[in-house]
Length: 337
Ligand code: UDP
Ligand code: MG
Image (cartoon, rainbow, N blue to C red):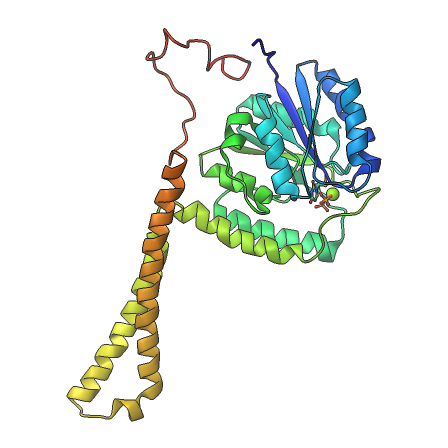
């Protein structure tokens, strides 16, 4: 029954990183030993086809702070991270890449930010060294749009080097490739976010799993995240606006044509054929938008109610209600003082 208290969980996903596993593990251990507080490592093998899992197993045999999760196939970085987050026990969870592009030496800076009271500390590659055209430019544009859309004022959404309070990250629903948008999604729950400047180290061995095609996927994700951020609990407000615009346009055209036909006795089919078509199109699509919005409302209800998800997130509770039963639960550990 007794469970030791863990301060930090380091979560690292690996996909075909056989050369990088051991050096990274040694570096993390060294840095974390230096901090001198309890920690665990959670290494996820995301269906690697090289010796990654073998090496991870060997590390596991020799170090009881290490946990290894092996996924059944390659699920992608987001799913691998999520598996690690769900498994993590630490009060603070630190995620980083397994390809040595993130330097464990920088972990203490992340921890310091969380200690200051932030819910998330997010890495920021201030000076980038990777390819300008395929990496830096798309990333700049995406970051700029993302900051505008989400209202979360970060320079760099793209890096996975981050620290989070466990309750914050475990509440974020992650799908698809959405790990890039964790800060934005977490801002939904009111999380506070700080930036930590990090070095941008080029990959030494192995190869990157993403190319330029990632840009399109990120762009699509941007749209869905924007939608989730603003309209998750009220999709009808989104589709409703479209519906009204559409119906108003169609209605106006309809009135104009009716006036032409019944007062001026014109043959509107002949005189205003294209306009008639547009009018009809607008009215029909207006009705479509309306229906989509209502269906969205139903889906949103299902989303929240099927899993009893609250539509809010509580930062802290001050109440004497549960005192007799459970007085030690919330304020164990250094962050709740
Ligand atoms: N990764 C993973 N599953 C995947 C792709 C990547 O677990 O399907 C891991 C990979 O091993 C690395 C991290 O995610 O630890 C970042 O991947 P990568 O270096 O390819 O991305 P980049 O740094 O080029 O953005
Ligand atoms: Mg990398």
